Image (cartoon, rainbow, N blue to C red; front, top):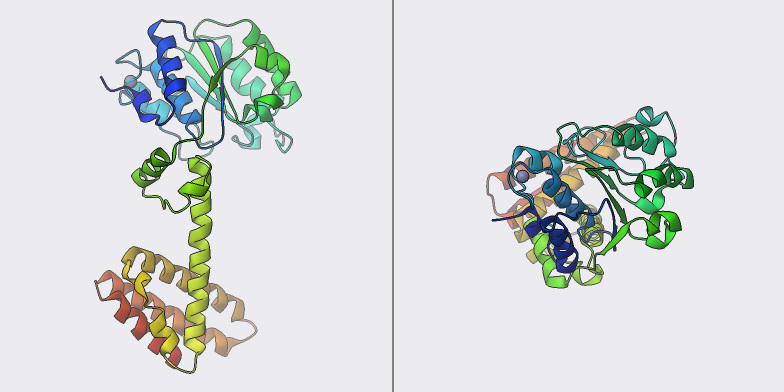
Length: 325
Ligand SMILES: [Zn+2]
């Protein structure tokens, strides 16, 4: 039988610890998931939530009504799991109005713990099976918030489970650390990291410098993408102003063959032109009119691209028109 735990990749020791606890019926009341960001700790915490709440199988099917609502997050703020018996805690996760108007610049406030956790742990779970409290970035608990939690960590309540996620266990209060059971997560091996990113259609260029962290790899590749776009915008502007068409032709080297990538770059260029147009309207109406015309040319070129015109021809034609504008 497929289990939701099978979807947490590259963390076999941690996952087998959790599966053993489930099959022996001895799930600890408070775990501490330690390890770097972006390696699957939160995914594993949600998988454990599924296992505790699943309607179909002890190790969590991942697809029943219960599991789905554990794994699916609300699209509106706060972005937390839809299941009423999974409480996600994290700094600045909730609008201030929900936590007594308190700023959380210093960390997870005691108000968040009081209103969202302590108000619930004394009562039966909404749907009966268990109540799962996941604390994202648990080292960001303020001292008063951590102290407010201590009693429930000390005196376990039946069917209430805590999972404290942290990349800095040393920053937790000793009293919190001593009452939670550590489960260690490691950096992801490169081939697994690559597969995870590929499965989500995310650029894998930064995999080897990401220290085994999916979130770092994603952040690095986005930096790369935005730098690449900025460079393209500069190159296009230079091609428009250049004395000859040579720079425009040079823009068509290899990279322009990737249609999606090119469409994204043209979109970025169109946005750049529209921002410049808005900025010029008051001070330089004539310049603004030129920029607006250029914007039209770029969006038309994007349409040509949509209709499967040759990317290289589209770019060359576009730069020719832009130069005349
Ligand atoms: Zn299920």
